[in-house]
Amino acid sequence: MTLARNQTLDMRGWLLGISVLTIGLDRWTKHLVSDNVGEGSAITVIPGVFRISHILNPGAAFSLFTDSPHPDHTRWFLVAFSLLAAIVVFGILLRIGRRMTMTTIALALVLGGDIGNLWDRIRTGLVIDFLEVHIVHYHWPDFNVADSAIVIGGILLMLASLRSKEKDHA
Image 1: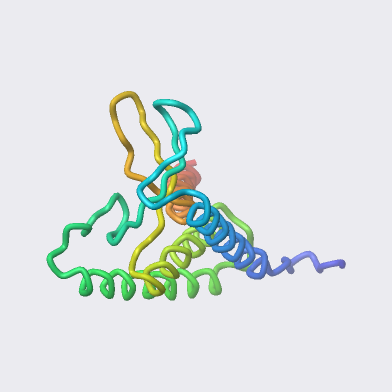
Image 2: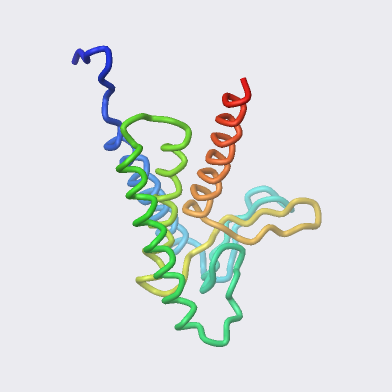
């Protein structure tokens, strides 16, 4: 396929593919954990550092809102927020996703991660978290593939922002 010099290949399909792959990986790993690790249990992978756990999180990232006095309100607030975020990020990807950049890859990861956790919230009201990390005496809140994609996407967005500022100064 030959493109004219001023044309670029539209990358939106590939970027949405990254989102779909992220959702699929998130669903698959949550399914594996649900089938193989008892709720509240864990399998030690690296003693004192890393375990595969099975935690049902009714809250948001880092277990925010877990102790809410109105869990149903919290659930639907998180569903609405996640749905709005997915719509906004999807719209931005459609608008700027003609090129594959650090920013568009980041947005694709955020979209996939958002939908992965949104799926759980709509279906059961609880997000399955299963990656448990300990760093010295600090226990990092359990997380999942969707959370990882959102964090990696956020870091890439920050790096893209810093890179564009460096270009502006050059």
